[in-house]
Length: 289
Length: 289
Picture 1 (cartoon, chains in turn orange, brown):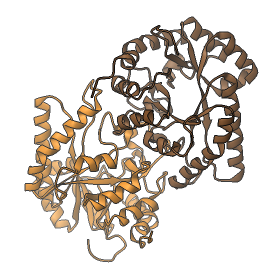
Picture 2 (tube, chains in turn brown, red):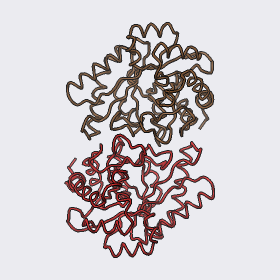
Picture 3 (tube, chains in turn yellow, blue):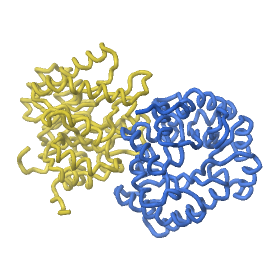
Picture 4 (cartoon, helix red, strand yellow):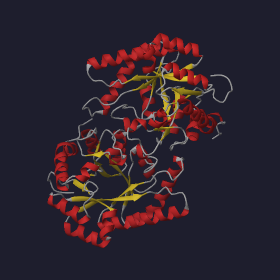
């Protein structure tokens, strides 16, 4: 990520402009003068992988991550095979689209299950099974700790510490972690674990959005534009920079109001908030302790 | 907590029967053959502290905790004084009602504040200021880690580990922690930190209810009757027992449907679920590791 423009590290995760097709999202990012996008598999699938890769190449935009693999907690052999197959396809898609970073939402409890420990063990086993295939394709499985309010139904991986522990047995080029501010801002060990992620070479991605209150009726949609919620981006940004992260920063917002708004206006707002809230924290010199 | 009856350790936290006045709740608990109640300050205030203490004494029920003190994060001098005064009153009320355990919900960010670290420091400072008064009244400040979805608006204390760290400088008779299943069930370090709480003599209270999905539109009301949600009470109960906890177990449920139902029926359901889900886990022998 070279250059010195103010938006050089800003990446539009296309979940933020959810109703745009892939080609529309690429165009919107280009119009806004951005250099990067984070892509979602459903919009890639709509046009087909080869076409998507061609559209991306023609756009001149780089792909900072593919969202997402994961959902690895099936306990039955069929479910396990289906999950492994789907994740192998996701690995191939990431490589074809030109990104090393495949974001992994690990999955929740299966129907009726209450044993979090067992579900977590299955995640670790599935990751181990996927690592050789990811390495072969030069793709990194980027483990995403999700907010504990999703521990039952989306991700039994809830903290950065847990994610780093899960990653430890595997090569740093093949298993990393993402810090998504929405999911981890509350964690009393966040600063310490971001530093650890840097030290251990696992910090693969930084995603930002705010945590809005009250929590939305559909809890998945409580993500907000930076500045609209409670998150201290200055503090987290300093930690990310202190950990040595110099990569792209994705803005990824699930929010019914933002999805209903004009996508170009959403992107303009995103750029202003980027300049006000995100960029200063990732560019200011790290204070000497 | 002596005796050998099946309900000897079951305590009705009166939030579960929210619409009952103090005297109605005491009567309902007596009718149900219970020995313990956990009380809320608003229902005590309605009749006055002296009358409440007399009603409790006449009922023969023991009070297992008073809910709640806390809300300690005010940053201005007036707010700080108001919080300290209110918590001194809460300490006096606990002592007068005959319980040592004052549950503390520490409070969230103040308006416009985003610095979690600063809010957490103020909590630590206020606890330090309250400790002598609590000790003088033989009351324990019982720190309650709340689910991270409430980190901004109700409690900047989110994990048991953080609660135990916060308690460490203070005498074990004066500062403890409560394990409330709703708030901590998701925590990958739960088992380890419950064991630590026991080892360090800090495990002051065990409160149970379930974590319902989907999360209620008012997120505070997502607590459910044991068995209606995702929590593995067997596992957590074994950890609690393994940590040496032999005290009462409060059932504390905020839930609009449960509040709308007949309180006697709610208590009967609670007793059945207690026998099925809670009691076996806290009485079965701890397996030798």
